[in-house]
Length: 161
Figure 1 (tube, rainbow, N blue to C red):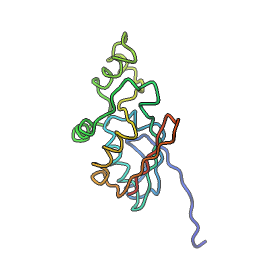
Figure 2 (cartoon, rainbow, N blue to C red):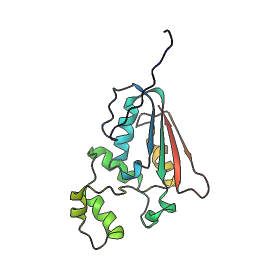
Figure 3 (cartoon, one colour):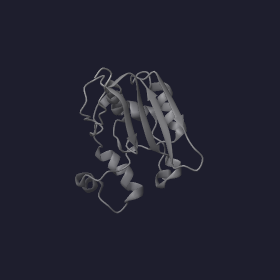
Figure 4 (spheres, rainbow, N blue to C red):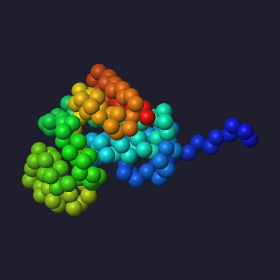
């Protein structure tokens, strides 16, 4: 039938989505970005999978509204350094920083070996605005929007390719 389109939902790991470049209309991420080492690398990878005009929608935990309020928001400089390094996996340094406040009596190397998911980076709407203002075009996006609702522990990011 002419004009018939089969809808398809793909599920994959953040750094290995089973899609070809330029083939997706939409990517949705909920509470993933804070767990990612090299989040800029992931955002650039996701942009490569989107068609022109495609949308990335992300729900991100707000550091100031959850148990991670003790951490400083990740800086643009820190995120750019990880992007330039290219590694997509959390390092021992990420686990050491996290364990210092969240599991002070635990061995960070053991936590890392266990594969436990931790918050690797920390964001507020303001810190994310600083990152995206400087980086969205370099990552492959035309526009971005950040929305924060009062009394929510999350904020929302839309990036358009």
